[in-house]
Image 1: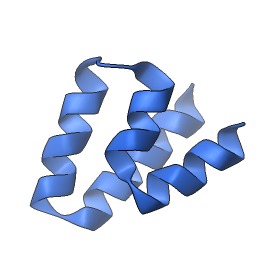
Image 2: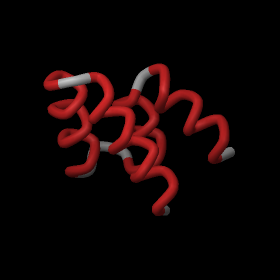
Image 3: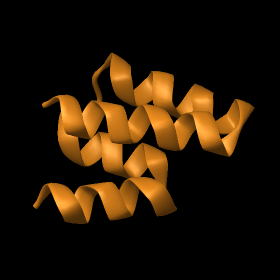
Image 4: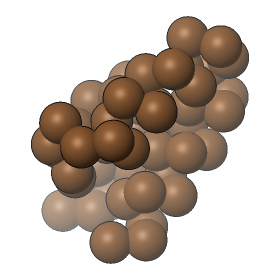
Length: 52
């Protein structure tokens, strides 16, 4: 299941984080990072998914 989440995180980083943690702080941080730059959002999303 983590492989699917990582693929989703590459396509839509906030969705990948949402599927992992819900509406936690990491989700809102990822939205901010994705708005500031797509690559930081992807890195954060993959990190959150791999960490848990």
